Length: 311
Ligand code: APR
Image (cartoon, rainbow, N blue to C red):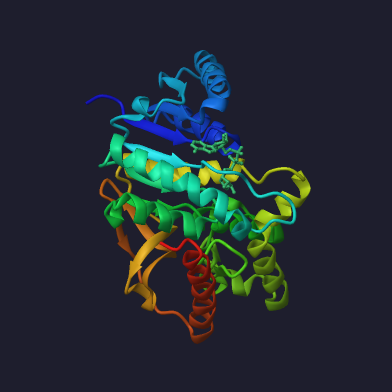
Protein backbone atom coordinates (compact mmCIF):
# COMPACT_ATOMS: atom_id res chain seq x y z
CA UNK A 1 0.00 0.00 0.00
CA UNK A 2 1.33 3.37 -1.00
CA UNK A 3 1.46 6.38 1.19
CA UNK A 4 -1.66 8.34 2.04
CA UNK A 5 -2.20 11.63 0.29
CA UNK A 6 -3.04 14.59 2.48
CA UNK A 7 -4.09 17.76 0.71
CA UNK A 8 -4.22 21.10 2.45
CA UNK A 9 -6.61 23.53 0.81
CA UNK A 10 -5.11 26.86 1.82
CA UNK A 11 -1.38 27.12 2.42
CA UNK A 12 -1.33 30.12 4.73
CA UNK A 13 -0.41 30.21 8.41
CA UNK A 14 -2.35 27.14 9.50
CA UNK A 15 -1.72 25.35 6.18
CA UNK A 16 2.05 25.71 6.50
CA UNK A 17 2.02 24.26 10.01
CA UNK A 18 -0.31 21.46 8.96
CA UNK A 19 2.20 20.53 6.26
CA UNK A 20 5.07 20.54 8.73
CA UNK A 21 3.33 18.39 11.35
CA UNK A 22 1.77 15.97 8.82
CA UNK A 23 5.17 15.41 7.26
CA UNK A 24 6.97 15.04 10.57
CA UNK A 25 4.43 12.46 11.71
CA UNK A 26 4.80 10.77 8.33
CA UNK A 27 1.05 10.66 7.88
CA UNK A 28 1.59 10.61 4.13
CA UNK A 29 2.61 12.77 1.20
CA UNK A 30 1.43 16.32 1.48
CA UNK A 31 0.01 18.58 -1.24
CA UNK A 32 -0.39 22.25 -0.38
CA UNK A 33 -3.01 23.85 -2.62
CA UNK A 34 -3.69 27.58 -2.83
CA UNK A 35 -5.04 30.14 -5.31
CA UNK A 36 -2.90 31.00 -8.38
CA UNK A 37 -1.77 34.27 -6.76
CA UNK A 38 -0.23 32.27 -3.94
CA UNK A 39 1.22 29.48 -6.04
CA UNK A 40 4.79 30.69 -5.58
CA UNK A 41 4.25 30.93 -1.84
CA UNK A 42 3.06 27.32 -1.49
CA UNK A 43 5.69 25.97 -3.88
CA UNK A 44 8.29 27.80 -1.80
CA UNK A 45 6.91 26.49 1.48
CA UNK A 46 6.87 22.96 0.06
CA UNK A 47 10.51 23.19 -1.01
CA UNK A 48 11.54 24.65 2.33
CA UNK A 49 9.77 21.78 4.13
CA UNK A 50 11.41 19.22 1.80
CA UNK A 51 14.76 20.62 2.82
CA UNK A 52 13.94 20.14 6.50
CA UNK A 53 13.57 16.41 5.92
CA UNK A 54 17.25 15.44 6.06
CA UNK A 55 17.45 16.67 9.67
CA UNK A 56 14.37 14.79 10.79
CA UNK A 57 14.80 11.81 8.50
CA UNK A 58 11.24 11.63 7.26
CA UNK A 59 10.40 10.73 3.69
CA UNK A 60 7.02 12.34 3.07
CA UNK A 61 6.94 14.34 -0.13
CA UNK A 62 5.62 17.86 0.09
CA UNK A 63 4.50 19.74 -3.00
CA UNK A 64 2.77 23.05 -3.66
CA UNK A 65 0.20 23.68 -6.40
CA UNK A 66 -2.71 25.78 -7.59
CA UNK A 67 -3.94 23.09 -9.97
CA UNK A 68 -6.91 21.08 -8.69
CA UNK A 69 -5.81 18.11 -10.83
CA UNK A 70 -2.88 17.63 -8.45
CA UNK A 71 -5.33 16.88 -5.64
CA UNK A 72 -6.85 13.85 -7.41
CA UNK A 73 -7.11 10.75 -5.23
CA UNK A 74 -6.56 12.61 -1.98
CA UNK A 75 -7.27 10.57 1.17
CA UNK A 76 -7.63 13.48 3.60
CA UNK A 77 -8.37 17.12 2.86
CA UNK A 78 -7.81 19.75 5.52
CA UNK A 79 -9.43 23.02 4.53
CA UNK A 80 -8.25 26.39 5.80
CA UNK A 81 -9.06 28.31 2.64
CA UNK A 82 -10.49 31.71 3.37
CA UNK A 83 -9.49 34.91 4.99
CA UNK A 84 -8.63 34.94 8.70
CA UNK A 85 -10.31 37.03 11.34
CA UNK A 86 -9.03 40.61 11.73
CA UNK A 87 -9.30 42.67 14.97
CA UNK A 88 -12.85 43.82 15.59
CA UNK A 89 -14.24 41.17 13.24
CA UNK A 90 -16.05 38.24 14.75
CA UNK A 91 -16.20 34.91 13.02
CA UNK A 92 -19.61 35.69 11.57
CA UNK A 93 -18.26 38.77 9.73
CA UNK A 94 -16.18 36.39 7.71
CA UNK A 95 -19.16 34.43 6.54
CA UNK A 96 -19.92 36.12 3.25
CA UNK A 97 -16.38 35.97 1.89
CA UNK A 98 -15.54 32.51 3.12
CA UNK A 99 -18.84 31.00 1.97
CA UNK A 100 -18.03 31.78 -1.66
CA UNK A 101 -14.63 30.17 -1.23
CA UNK A 102 -16.11 27.09 0.45
CA UNK A 103 -18.59 26.52 -2.37
CA UNK A 104 -15.76 26.53 -4.88
CA UNK A 105 -13.64 24.23 -2.74
CA UNK A 106 -16.49 21.77 -2.09
CA UNK A 107 -17.24 21.40 -5.80
CA UNK A 108 -13.61 20.78 -6.64
CA UNK A 109 -13.03 18.34 -3.78
CA UNK A 110 -16.06 16.35 -4.89
CA UNK A 111 -14.72 16.17 -8.41
CA UNK A 112 -11.18 15.17 -7.48
CA UNK A 113 -11.70 12.82 -4.54
CA UNK A 114 -15.31 11.88 -3.76
CA UNK A 115 -14.26 9.34 -1.12
CA UNK A 116 -11.92 11.57 0.87
CA UNK A 117 -12.25 12.39 4.55
CA UNK A 118 -12.59 16.14 4.95
CA UNK A 119 -11.66 18.26 7.94
CA UNK A 120 -12.86 21.86 7.77
CA UNK A 121 -11.06 24.57 9.76
CA UNK A 122 -12.13 27.76 7.94
CA UNK A 123 -14.20 30.18 10.01
CA UNK A 124 -16.99 30.74 10.84
CA UNK A 125 -16.51 27.04 11.40
CA UNK A 126 -20.06 26.00 12.23
CA UNK A 127 -21.33 27.50 8.97
CA UNK A 128 -18.36 26.47 6.83
CA UNK A 129 -18.51 22.78 7.70
CA UNK A 130 -22.29 22.86 7.11
CA UNK A 131 -21.76 24.58 3.75
CA UNK A 132 -19.13 22.06 2.70
CA UNK A 133 -21.46 19.18 3.56
CA UNK A 134 -24.43 20.71 1.72
CA UNK A 135 -22.55 21.72 -1.40
CA UNK A 136 -20.49 18.52 -1.74
CA UNK A 137 -23.33 16.17 -0.81
CA UNK A 138 -20.74 13.99 0.97
CA UNK A 139 -22.02 11.42 3.48
CA UNK A 140 -21.90 12.72 7.04
CA UNK A 141 -19.11 10.36 8.12
CA UNK A 142 -16.75 11.99 5.60
CA UNK A 143 -17.11 15.57 6.83
CA UNK A 144 -16.08 17.03 10.17
CA UNK A 145 -15.21 20.43 11.57
CA UNK A 146 -12.19 21.19 13.75
CA UNK A 147 -13.21 23.29 16.72
CA UNK A 148 -13.66 21.30 19.94
CA UNK A 149 -10.18 19.79 19.69
CA UNK A 150 -8.72 23.28 19.78
CA UNK A 151 -11.15 24.72 22.31
CA UNK A 152 -10.51 21.75 24.62
CA UNK A 153 -6.76 22.15 24.21
CA UNK A 154 -7.14 25.77 25.28
CA UNK A 155 -9.25 24.77 28.30
CA UNK A 156 -6.69 22.11 29.22
CA UNK A 157 -3.90 24.63 28.91
CA UNK A 158 -5.55 27.12 31.25
CA UNK A 159 -6.32 24.39 33.82
CA UNK A 160 -2.70 23.23 33.70
CA UNK A 161 -1.49 26.81 34.08
CA UNK A 162 -3.81 27.34 37.06
CA UNK A 163 -2.96 24.12 38.91
CA UNK A 164 0.70 23.93 37.93
CA UNK A 165 0.23 20.24 37.05
CA UNK A 166 1.14 18.56 33.76
CA UNK A 167 -1.06 19.52 30.84
CA UNK A 168 -0.69 15.91 29.72
CA UNK A 169 -2.83 14.79 32.65
CA UNK A 170 -5.60 17.32 32.13
CA UNK A 171 -8.60 15.95 30.28
CA UNK A 172 -11.70 17.91 29.50
CA UNK A 173 -14.11 18.65 26.72
CA UNK A 174 -15.65 21.71 25.22
CA UNK A 175 -18.90 21.16 23.36
CA UNK A 176 -21.15 23.31 21.19
CA UNK A 177 -20.38 25.89 18.55
CA UNK A 178 -16.97 27.41 17.87
CA UNK A 179 -17.89 30.82 19.18
CA UNK A 180 -18.39 32.67 22.42
CA UNK A 181 -21.32 30.38 23.33
CA UNK A 182 -19.18 27.22 23.39
CA UNK A 183 -19.73 24.99 26.42
CA UNK A 184 -16.70 23.96 28.51
CA UNK A 185 -17.88 21.01 30.61
CA UNK A 186 -15.99 21.71 33.85
CA UNK A 187 -17.95 19.05 35.70
CA UNK A 188 -16.13 16.36 33.73
CA UNK A 189 -12.68 17.95 33.63
CA UNK A 190 -10.01 16.08 35.57
CA UNK A 191 -6.31 16.23 36.32
CA UNK A 192 -5.08 12.66 36.40
CA UNK A 193 -8.62 11.53 37.18
CA UNK A 194 -9.10 14.00 40.06
CA UNK A 195 -12.09 16.26 39.37
CA UNK A 196 -11.02 19.78 38.56
CA UNK A 197 -14.00 20.99 40.61
CA UNK A 198 -12.12 19.68 43.68
CA UNK A 199 -8.92 21.47 42.69
CA UNK A 200 -10.08 24.91 41.53
CA UNK A 201 -12.59 27.16 43.31
CA UNK A 202 -15.89 27.67 41.44
CA UNK A 203 -15.41 31.40 40.82
CA UNK A 204 -11.87 30.86 39.47
CA UNK A 205 -13.07 27.97 37.31
CA UNK A 206 -15.73 30.25 35.89
CA UNK A 207 -13.00 32.74 34.90
CA UNK A 208 -11.08 29.95 33.19
CA UNK A 209 -14.20 28.90 31.27
CA UNK A 210 -14.72 32.51 30.19
CA UNK A 211 -11.13 32.84 29.04
CA UNK A 212 -11.51 29.60 27.06
CA UNK A 213 -14.56 30.98 25.24
CA UNK A 214 -12.63 34.00 23.97
CA UNK A 215 -9.18 32.40 23.70
CA UNK A 216 -9.12 32.73 19.92
CA UNK A 217 -10.00 36.41 20.16
CA UNK A 218 -7.28 36.97 22.79
CA UNK A 219 -4.70 35.85 20.22
CA UNK A 220 -6.32 37.83 17.39
CA UNK A 221 -5.96 40.98 19.52
CA UNK A 222 -2.31 40.27 20.30
CA UNK A 223 -1.43 39.56 16.67
CA UNK A 224 -3.27 42.57 15.32
CA UNK A 225 -3.28 40.85 11.96
CA UNK A 226 -4.43 37.24 11.63
CA UNK A 227 -5.47 34.47 13.99
CA UNK A 228 -3.94 31.53 15.85
CA UNK A 229 -2.16 28.87 13.82
CA UNK A 230 0.10 26.52 15.79
CA UNK A 231 -2.55 24.97 18.05
CA UNK A 232 -5.24 24.92 15.34
CA UNK A 233 -2.88 22.98 13.06
CA UNK A 234 -1.95 20.43 15.72
CA UNK A 235 -5.63 19.98 16.65
CA UNK A 236 -6.60 19.12 13.07
CA UNK A 237 -3.65 16.77 12.72
CA UNK A 238 -4.84 14.77 15.76
CA UNK A 239 -8.11 14.23 13.90
CA UNK A 240 -6.41 13.34 10.60
CA UNK A 241 -4.08 10.93 12.38
CA UNK A 242 -6.95 9.16 14.12
CA UNK A 243 -8.54 8.61 10.70
CA UNK A 244 -5.37 7.52 8.91
CA UNK A 245 -4.20 5.17 11.68
CA UNK A 246 -7.75 4.05 12.64
CA UNK A 247 -7.08 5.05 16.24
CA UNK A 248 -10.74 5.61 17.14
CA UNK A 249 -9.84 8.53 19.34
CA UNK A 250 -12.65 10.38 21.09
CA UNK A 251 -12.27 14.04 20.20
CA UNK A 252 -14.77 16.87 20.48
CA UNK A 253 -15.50 17.68 16.82
CA UNK A 254 -18.14 19.58 14.88
CA UNK A 255 -20.09 16.55 13.64
CA UNK A 256 -23.48 16.34 11.98
CA UNK A 257 -26.00 15.53 14.72
CA UNK A 258 -29.14 13.68 13.73
CA UNK A 259 -30.91 13.41 17.04
CA UNK A 260 -27.88 13.21 19.31
CA UNK A 261 -28.19 15.56 22.31
CA UNK A 262 -31.61 16.50 20.88
CA UNK A 263 -29.95 18.30 17.95
CA UNK A 264 -31.02 17.54 14.41
CA UNK A 265 -29.45 18.64 11.14
CA UNK A 266 -26.59 20.78 12.46
CA UNK A 267 -22.85 20.36 12.82
CA UNK A 268 -22.00 21.09 16.43
CA UNK A 269 -19.18 20.19 18.80
CA UNK A 270 -19.86 16.76 20.33
CA UNK A 271 -17.59 13.89 21.50
CA UNK A 272 -16.78 12.08 18.26
CA UNK A 273 -15.05 8.80 17.50
CA UNK A 274 -12.76 9.13 14.48
CA UNK A 275 -11.47 5.98 12.80
CA UNK A 276 -10.90 4.62 9.32
CA UNK A 277 -14.59 5.18 8.51
CA UNK A 278 -14.28 8.83 9.38
CA UNK A 279 -16.85 10.02 11.89
CA UNK A 280 -17.77 6.60 13.26
CA UNK A 281 -19.88 7.54 16.27
CA UNK A 282 -21.04 10.42 18.40
CA UNK A 283 -20.86 9.58 22.10
CA UNK A 284 -23.94 10.84 23.88
CA UNK A 285 -24.04 11.26 27.64
CA UNK A 286 -26.39 12.76 30.20
CA UNK A 287 -26.08 16.50 30.61
CA UNK A 288 -27.14 18.50 33.66
CA UNK A 289 -29.98 20.99 33.22
CA UNK A 290 -27.49 23.89 33.16
CA UNK A 291 -25.38 22.18 30.50
CA UNK A 292 -28.51 21.48 28.45
CA UNK A 293 -29.42 25.15 28.62
CA UNK A 294 -25.93 26.16 27.55
CA UNK A 295 -26.01 23.70 24.66
CA UNK A 296 -29.36 25.17 23.62
CA UNK A 297 -27.86 28.68 23.64
CA UNK A 298 -24.98 27.57 21.49
CA UNK A 299 -27.41 25.83 19.11
CA UNK A 300 -29.29 29.10 18.68
CA UNK A 301 -26.00 30.78 17.69
CA UNK A 302 -25.09 27.96 15.30
CA UNK A 303 -28.54 28.04 13.68
CA UNK A 304 -28.19 31.79 13.18
CA UNK A 305 -24.89 31.57 11.28
CA UNK A 306 -26.05 28.56 9.33
CA UNK A 307 -29.24 30.39 8.28
CA UNK A 308 -27.06 33.19 6.91
CA UNK A 309 -25.57 30.76 4.40
CA UNK A 310 -29.02 30.32 2.80
CA UNK A 311 -28.18 26.66 2.20
N1 APR B 1 -8.74 28.10 -2.55
C1 APR B 1 -7.63 27.78 -1.89
N2 APR B 1 -7.04 28.59 -0.99
C2 APR B 1 -7.58 29.78 -0.79
C3 APR B 1 -8.75 30.20 -1.46
C4 APR B 1 -9.34 29.29 -2.38
N3 APR B 1 -10.45 29.60 -3.07
N4 APR B 1 -9.03 31.46 -1.04
C5 APR B 1 -8.09 31.80 -0.15
N5 APR B 1 -7.20 30.80 0.01
C6 APR B 1 -6.00 30.76 0.81
C7 APR B 1 -5.29 32.09 0.96
O1 APR B 1 -4.60 32.44 -0.24
C8 APR B 1 -4.37 31.84 2.13
O2 APR B 1 -3.10 31.37 1.74
O3 APR B 1 -6.27 30.39 2.15
C9 APR B 1 -5.11 30.74 2.91
C10 APR B 1 -5.54 31.17 4.30
O4 APR B 1 -4.38 31.37 5.02
P1 APR B 1 -4.19 32.55 6.08
O5 APR B 1 -4.75 33.80 5.51
O6 APR B 1 -2.79 32.55 6.53
O7 APR B 1 -5.18 32.12 7.26
P2 APR B 1 -4.93 31.07 8.44
O8 APR B 1 -4.38 31.79 9.63
O9 APR B 1 -4.20 29.88 7.93
O10 APR B 1 -6.44 30.69 8.79
C11 APR B 1 -7.24 30.03 7.84
O11 APR B 1 -8.72 29.04 9.46
O12 APR B 1 -8.95 29.40 11.75
C12 APR B 1 -9.42 29.72 10.48
O13 APR B 1 -10.23 31.94 10.85
C13 APR B 1 -9.27 31.17 10.20
O14 APR B 1 -10.73 31.07 8.33
C14 APR B 1 -9.37 31.17 8.71
C15 APR B 1 -8.67 29.87 8.33
